[in-house]
Length: 261
Image (tube, rainbow, N blue to C red; front, side, top):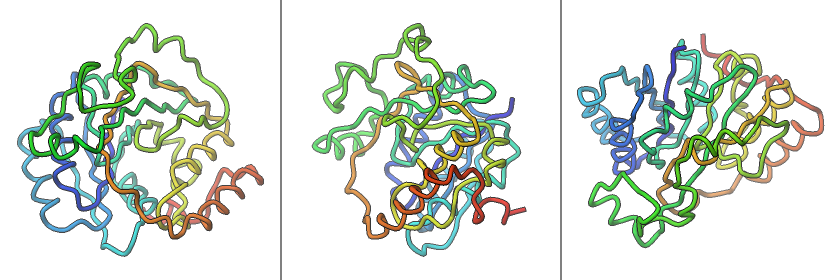
């Protein structure tokens, strides 16, 4: 099974640097890393280039022009550029627990997508984390909240079983799925522009196609670096798209990855 770690980013090289540091410390590396860049400036490319010689797997930097929040589009373009069987997806502000990749790979199973735990880094410690390049945390770390979520116990994680439907615990910043399942629903719906709902819509359509969800609790842990919430100017429209997906049991979207050969 060939795996790809997919990281979405936009103009926050300091956070991306810590994310890539945490990738370099993984107990198991992915077969390749894909940076889905929604229009960052050159300093992000320079940060990525520094890790080409540090992390011993190929790193692909897929960039599109900055024309507003178009996460769905850049993720489709990025997944179109890989032949990996399995996609492990995070955001560029999410530091990885050392066993993050190993946990997702260990739990990968046909007919299932995975969603993992998110620990939040407290706003008052973000500057310290970035300036001191802190990328390892534990239950005693003062920088984090939700401390119980940082506990890593594989045996406890095994008690969580696959289920139908999307969970309220689902976060698009910590999810993994089979590329073939993604292609069969035509990937992300690029009608989503602006912040919100593109990830949950994808999970709902996977569920509509019969793919079960499984929560990685006590495993698959990320540490989210607090930041200001993106503008929600288009959220009402995005909500309407998602509600149609639910009401009409939509699986295939018409504005997806099939545009990119």
